[in-house]
Length: 423
Image 1 (cartoon, rainbow, N blue to C red):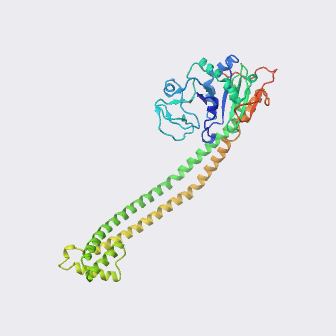
Image 2: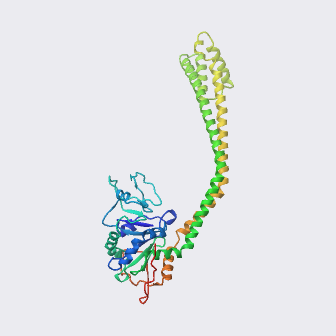
């Protein structure tokens, strides 16, 4: 994938790139070349940009600098035809094609420029399959960054021009010497060719995972139907219990209030009976045994002409009926919840084998995609093109990059051997 960045090489490689299994790159490629040293190499590099973008796909990012001008979101949107992703893998996104996006969630290929919110959002990196400027302008920008990249990677003048492949999984870099007639696309194409079996294996894992997830979705359908039906039944039972509880409490509370107020005005035996029955009703306990006798006395008391206006006798039996209705509906709710739990447990039991299989496939795929394959593919590609390992030859004694760097270059007597890639 082709990337354009306004960051320095050190700032760019300090971005939090994730592992490939969660959308990150296996590696990043940098061309270190001045126009005066290799004009044809540079021209071909930018002429073949769409080919480079396609051949590297989502596995490798090919980075070109644009250090003297930040990539404005509005300008990206006006660049014309071709796809534009105002993102880079592994960094949070707060921008989109239409302007600032307040989302701070992580995206596999998202980016978030660090710093405070601004009215005019500046984007430091963009993934593009076309060049936003004239090739000569990109050549000029590339030339201006050579010294910085030399210092960062520890590349001597004798090794220029070269391509540096930063292998993120292996935490190492490979410097491949180039000539004016060489093609970065040709090197990347040969690297992909060397890794095709590995990349095909990753695609097989993706296909197996997708097929297993389809089987899981199919198996889940009838189980989800059962769960949904059980959930609706449990919800209806809960509502029924709630309605019964409110009806019971409304009648009970009114009777409790009447008995409490009446009992509070009396200090005799009748007042004591009213207070006792009021307390039992308020507690929600059944009116049985001695309490039932007290209730009968209270009902006779309130049936007398002196207090009949309170209409209590008819309420107490109704309160008991409402209590029994609530207890029945509460039990029905509990049974409905048990049926819901059983449906969910049955679904978990039935789906666990599918989920375990998918998880094992993902673990295998993650181990494969995060494994050390890129450095070996670059080395094999370099060797197949006639280059030889050169140890530390061409490297400076000090560099900012702390990872090990290996060099591949052609024997001095050999002619350039990279075939020129044709679009």
